[in-house]
Structures are given as C-alpha cells and as structure tokens.
Image (cartoon, rainbow, N blue to C red; front, side, top):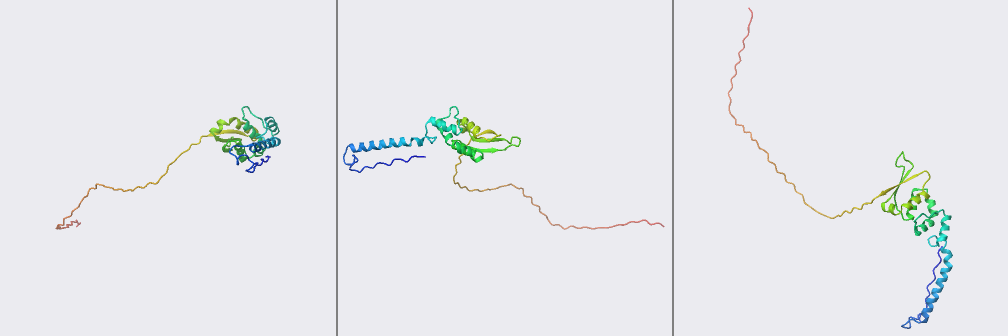
Amino acid sequence: MKAPQLPKINVPWWQDGATTSEALKEPHYLTKGVSAFWQRMRDWLAWPLAQLDPLTCSEPLLDLLAWDRDIQRFDGEPLSLYRKRVKFAAINAKDAGSVAGFKAIFERLGIGIVALKERERRDEWDVITIEVRDSAMAQNSRLMLELIRQYGRTCRRYRFQVSYPAVLGIRHGTFGHSFSLYVASNLPIHTLTANGQQMNHNKHVFVASMREQ
C-alpha cells in the first residue's frame, strides 16, 4: 500500500515573496518551511506502511518477512536482490510447478532463460536442461543454484547449458548486370564428289552335267 503524496502549496503571487520584489522576502521562506514540515509529518505517518513492502522496509523487518516466506539469504547476496526474492516469494512458489512459471521466476530476478528442455534422452528422463547466456551464468551462478534448490521439482536433476550468441550482419543493396555468351569451334569439313561414268558389262553362264548310260 502506497501513501498519497502531499499536494503542492500554491501561494498567490502577491504573497509568494518573489513576484513583487527582486529579492526573495519572508513569505517565500515561510511557505518553504511549512511545506517541509508537513512533508516530514507525512513521512513519519507513512513509515509503518513502508515497512510492509520488502523493497522499502528496514533490514531487521526484512529478515522477519524473509523468515515468514521461507527465504534464506545466501553468502554475498546483494541487499537489492535479497529484497526482490522476499517480495516475489509467494508468486515464485506458485509458479514453480510449470515450465512457463519456472522461466518467470528467473525473469523476475533478472535472469533470462533461453530454453528449458525436458526428457531429451530416454535413459536420463529425470534430467532438465536449463539453457542460459554465458553472461548470466557467470554473474548469477550462486543465485541460480539457490533458485533450483528452493523451487526445483522433486526427483529431478538440473543441468545448465551455456549458449554463446553470435551476431551476424549482412549488408544489402541493388545491383544490375548484363550477360552475353559467345561460342566458337573449329570443325573439319569433308566433301564427297561423285563423277558419273558409263559402265559396260557382259555376262555368260556355262553349265556342265554328267549322265549315266
């Protein structure tokens, strides 16, 4: 719950101490003093409301909220990250049972999951592969292990797979061209010439046979 802001005090121009004179006069400082006083009163009254928000409460009360929401601060965890884990503890516990919800848990804490792969191999059906960027693995390794410990599925093994993105740039443009193909070959040429001549031909057939007497 957020407390409303104080309205701005607008003093008439003939009483603001600045419009009718070149130098600032007493009404101007009086207005500033009254505004500062009521702003401090507003902060005092809104302090209990701020303690209900893990992002703005004091550290002793933050530890109490973390204990109530089953959050343990690991060694070296920044305070800002610790506050986020306490704030999103309830919604994270609700989303832990699905693939989309598990990705949302990481995204709420600033870690982007590229892919979440299940049952890739038949002999290792209980292995879940989490594919992340190399920078996320290097900067948030301790946090990722803590999230798996707290929100991981029962009887499942988790394995990280690091991907290295490569950016490829291709420039494009218009171009034109003309194409011509010429083929030359050296083939031998054979010429057959026939001259007509008269031919004479005589044919004789002789037959001989033997008879018995």
